[in-house]
Amino acid sequence: MRCVLNLTALCVSAVCLVAPCLGQAMQSQTPAQAQPQTLTVDAAHIVGPHSATPLNTVGAGRANEGLRADWQSQLSTVQTEIGFHNLRFHGIFHDDMGVYSEDKNGKPIYNFQYVDALYDFLLSRHIRPFVELSFMPGALASGPQTVFWWKGNITPPKDMAKWNALIAAFVTHLKSRYGANEVNHWYFEVWNEPDLHDGFFTGSQADYFNLYKNTVDSIRSVCPHCLVGGPATASGWEADWLAYITKNHVPADFLSTHTYGVVRGSFDGDGTDGTVLDTSPDSIVGRVRGSRERIDHSATPNLQLHYTEWSSSYTATDFIHDQYISAPFILEKLRATSPLAQSMSYWTFTDIFEENSPPKRPFYGGFGLMNLQGIRKPAYFAYKFLAQLGPTDIATTEPANSWATIKPNGSIQVLFWNYTAIAPPSDSDDQIFYKREQPAQPAPATALNLTHIPDGRYNLAVYRTGYKQNDAYTAYLHMGSPDDLSPAQVAQLNHAASGAPTETRTITVKGHSFDQTFPMHQNGTVLVTLTPAQTVPHK
Image (cartoon, rainbow, N blue to C red; front, side):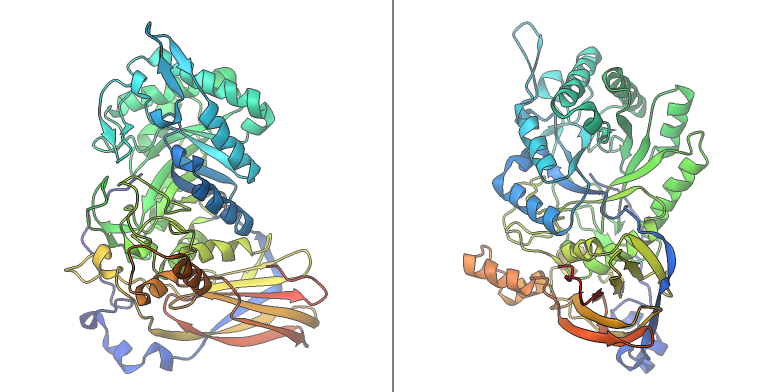
């Protein structure tokens, strides 16, 4: 789980808050003085079905963490309020899951009890496993090399025949327990970031391709319709892998890879390396577009594309994950990439995550949508707002930074945001800059104009996240950044990030239109819902 980029830090004059970057035009007219930006939404203009991409898949750290009560409680909340379809994590074969061992004669012993407990829970919460087949069980490992505090073994199998037998036994067990009709909907991804030789796989590219072929052949030998794919890379090998599966007639249903919005940094297995946000508009989006084009121009153009990890940063010590800027960042990137990929799996849903070690503070720059105590971060609300959208897109004049939908009951949802990319100064990084409070600058208001809606009474609700609005991290800073949170402090932060609407009222629509102007600040996000008054509002 890490994308590696080593580029020069970028300061974009139009969005940088550092004084020397400000242009003369911005000095002469502040955003607060600017005219409102009109957002027109035409409820009668159906664009098409709403994309399933944003909520298709989400990530978690490793399998064994999923046996914890607090982890399961947080996932239950996520599924109730958001409802992702698949969950991906490392380590289903790690020794702490007890899957594989050998007797004194070297005969394999399989034990799927912990796997069953975890998968049973996931399915009970209406989320399927996106099965990452990793890492190597100790008894099957060809070497001692590991990654992370929990020591995931990153070596190829010492005996490919035993690996193949493990894969076949594993999938056979899943079919027996859950049924072929269920398991045929699961995704099976071979390994994690094998292109990072010093991070996740000690073998060569040829070794990985051999592992991929053997693994997929073993799956298909017992499950002909199981969905299989790879190469699950950090940043490379896509073209090589596409050529390999074509030349060698190796099955594949999807290409998977990863991307993070970092312009400076390197592999960060212990979370100590500094990272810097990539402020370029094509960050994340350009990477996904490139993958889609490689598939389209390959001999296998019908492959699905799954980004099985993505986020603003690939280290679990980057405080941008905790800041309110994460919400519009997520929405901006998902809006642009949804037509290109079948899933964009946000890394991760929870800060219960132990790659570097068990977390030591309530907020530590962790990947999660929720912190250790289950407090909802601004990033959480980006997904919660997305979950409130309807199944049908309607036309909006600002498709780059808004999403408008309609539901069968006639209710309308309009989600819009201001994303203003702010990079740390050249002598700093995200770990320093985003750890501090980031007061939001004014931005032009949004003048929402809803047209072609039936006249009548509607329940209007407005939800927000931004600076000091569903912004638990800023509230935590104002609390003095305690190393430990008391129950009363947790309750206080949960209240600051309750997700309650900032405005509710009943309106009467006449003339088939509705207009309201919404004040905005940089990196603020707004969801507006109009529900016919005779219908119970969506909560």
